[in-house]
Length: 419
Image (cartoon, rainbow, N blue to C red; front, side, top):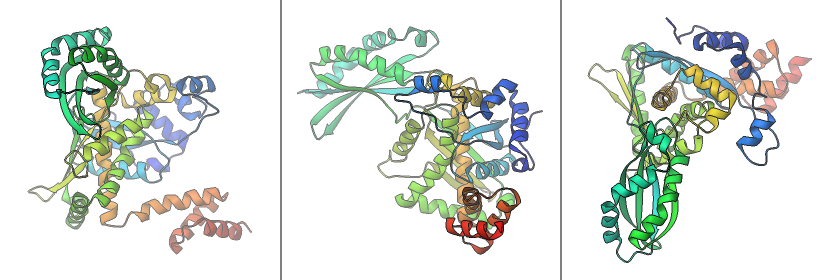
């Protein structure tokens, strides 16, 4: 049986790690070579992905290990520049697997496309007119994407909202579109563009914006976990709850709390070729949906004294179209996860976010966040000044021991030891 639990994985060479992941994920030699080669995205591919291309920019691709989600083991690809994130996430996943890991769910792939109708003297009346034409609106929109409809997707409902703005009252129409395994931006935007003239005709208003919303509140990923008190220690459980209470009460702390969650989420979104900005904006908007900026996770203590954590977050990721199907390394990353549905990818990403939040809170509430983070930062500094091998380890050890993790001290030690 395949397992994502490894002992001493970080001690292996990069080549050996790739071999282990390749075996776990059934990667071919060609696919492993794509992950080795920073030029996998050649100039031609890059030039078709974005405009005004002058080169390519490489970030490290690591893997989160030890994950069990809904009873299945995963090795999770993560692209990030920040030290300690992958190690911390893997450590939290190891704690979680002691109690069967994470359990995740998904509410469905409904995206919202918004149509802004202005210049209405009677917006309430116009809203009723739109509802009377609901079936016709759905029919016309779905004609624009017969393939999506064929596989069970398409517009499922039409909603109306009247809002007060600086420019007066506006009638906002929401097309609720099931985009299935696609992120869906192109599909919902096409439908909104097409139906806008018809809405102007039946309401006698003027349409301006026709665009999706990244607040995908009908596309939520949820995950939950129980960490036994024997693993953390009762004092650590209570300390984590104190840290969570701080974030729940204070938006200044909540912002950093949620940033830590995104430290886990964004690397997986990026690795799989999905839109990191869409996920970030949706997450922070959802954190504010009550009118107060709140944490995206909750932490509690159950009757046994164990730590209980949950996350609920908009997760509009897809496996169809976009960079996911163009970027060669993103395609390999998706294969590594073994997912065939966007819902499975969304649940994995939410679980990684919950794991990263656990790791961050544990570090903050016990040893302090700097201990693990600074050891990796020290290694980066030592590498920057040119240290390698045993010399690098010696400089890192000295900086941490002296608690002087600074570039000038790394250079001083390098000059000293090099002699």
